[in-house]
Length: 119
Image 1 (cartoon, helix red, strand yellow):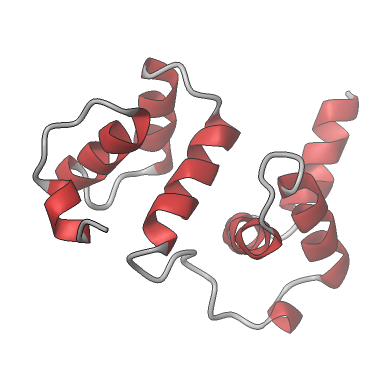
Image 2 (cartoon, rainbow, N blue to C red; image 1 turned 30 degrees about the vertical axis):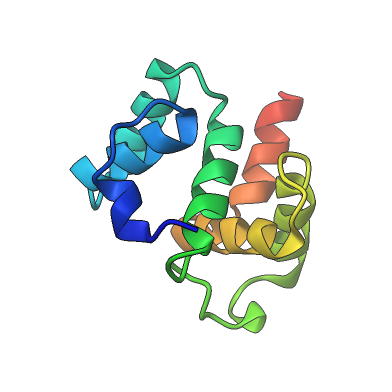
């Protein structure tokens, strides 16, 4: 298996390689930058997020809020978040990390998402 650093400095062709290259050039991108990149590459934003978490989980600690306890979040929101994220990925631990990141930014993210989708 190649090292993380060898990935960073090789020519990029696959979508995974393009994502790694994007993060090499933008080590701390804003959400807007990430979404713009996903749209430019015509990748569903949820699929893009899944690829990012899977790629980098092999090399670095992922999820900005992974060290927060589950009890730091509203249990209903976290459960709903995991359920919703599992619609897009097949790894519950990654779904939980994504949910925690969203809930750290907006504590009722998933309730609002459900309401928005209904409206």
